[in-house]
Each structure stands twice: as C-alpha cells, then as structure tokens.
Image 1 (cartoon, rainbow, N blue to C red):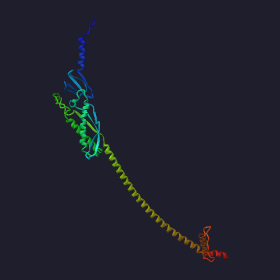
Image 2 (image 1 turned 30 degrees about the vertical axis):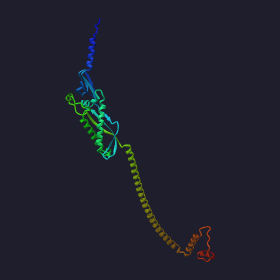
Image 3 (image 1 turned 180 degrees about the horizontal axis):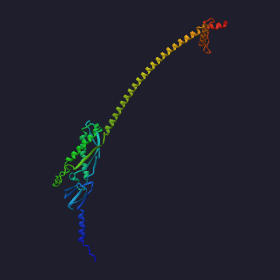
Length: 318
C-alpha cells in the first residue's frame, strides 16, 4: 500500500510556502519601497527587482516614483500689486524622492491610506500662499508679458523651499530608525513645475473693463472719423483750388489762341477781300442777313432806305 502523507507534513509544506511568500517582495520600475518592522522603518529600496525581508515581522509599502500632478480644484482671487483683482487657476507637478520623509509627512493617512491625497491637501495650502505672495507683488500686465516665466520660476522655488523645510503633518518626533536611514526633512518630494492655467478678471470687473474698452474704442473711432473728415475737406479744397487754377489757365490760353485765330482770320479775310471790296461788302451783308433772319417766324421792319438793306436795294436797281 502506498504511504500516506501525514497531516504534519502538509501543514509544514503550507507553512513553508507562506514563509517563502512573505520573505520576498517585488519592486517595480515605477515604484520605490519602504520596509518597516513593527511600524519602524528599516530599509528603503530604490532599485527595482526581487527583494528579501523578514517574514511576518516586516511589511512593505510602495510609493509611486513617477511624476504626479496636483490641480487646484477651485480658482482663487488675488489682488495684484496694481490693486487689480484677478482669478487664478494653477497646477503643480511633483515626485516622491524620499519615501521615508514622505511617509512621515503623510503619517496621518496611515499605511494603505491615500497618502497622495493627504500630500495634495498640504500642497494646496503651499501653492495658494505662494501664488498670493508672488502675484500680490507684481502688476497684472506682468502675467501677460515675458516676465511670466520668471514669475512661474519664483512661485516654484517658494513652493519647493516650503515643501523641503516644512514639518511633518503630525507632531511625532522621528525615531532612531528614521535618523539611521538619514531621511531628509520636509515632505520628501521634489517640486518639478508650477503653472498658471488661467488668469482672468472677476465677472464684475470684466464687465466694467469691457464697457470701458468699448467707450475707449468709440472715442478712438470718433477721433479717427473727425481726422478723416478734416483730411477729406483739405483734399477737396486743394483739388478744387487746383481745378480753378487749371480752368483759369486753360481759359486764358483758349482766349489767347482764339484772339490770335480771329486776328489771323481777319488778316486773311482782309487780304482776300481787299482785292474786291464790293464783293467783301456783299459777303458781309449776306452773313448779317443770315444771323439776323435765322428763324422762320422772324419779322424785320425797316425803312426802304435803311443802310442794312443796301444790298437788296442794289439788286432791285439792277
């Protein structure tokens, strides 16, 4: 008959598997690990891989080493140095660089608690105070100029300085194990970047500014129209003056040319008709008759011996 496995052997195997399972842990590339023994930190694992710990006595807590982001849930109102009130929305990016300091700073969350939310709550206060400190010392137009980058750097430096020098969120003194691991003070995080995502005026201020801008634009439009009308009148006056001068010059030249033409015509007529004065007198009389009697209903009453009818009288005599 086959030998039967004793219950003690089965229990020993199961206990051995549990012991092995609790003796190793894995640190992923995106994590760091803090090993504690009875609540006291004993080791910090920064390198990924398979690690060994004392089973049942030591526990492991993992921390995300990737870049984390905190976005202010609500906009805050701040008075700039020029007394203009603005509404700001901002966010910051941070990462955990010291798991022990971070764990100590967020000890109120407890192991397995949401330490990230606890830290974001504290960063919210730091970010809000830093924004008020820096933005309150610069005018509003500085946020719309190249100085914006300098302002962002200054805010980031203030938040980073406060995060590195702040006390933990509880009042407990660091243990000897904490000191032995040479943990840094502060929150154990690095502030990577701080950015303002929105800078706007409060609604009541925006409406007043829009009205003032409309009034200013209307005033400028009226000024431009008045200047345009003035320039238009000047251009028209110059054009009219030049037109008058040109017409006068043209009329002068026309009269001169007409006079010269008439003189030349008279000279030609005199030269031509001087050879036969009687024909010239007859031709001129015919022209006078045409000009005087140029309508069908024209009636001329003259005495028979009138000088105007001398050519007709000559024809009657003939």
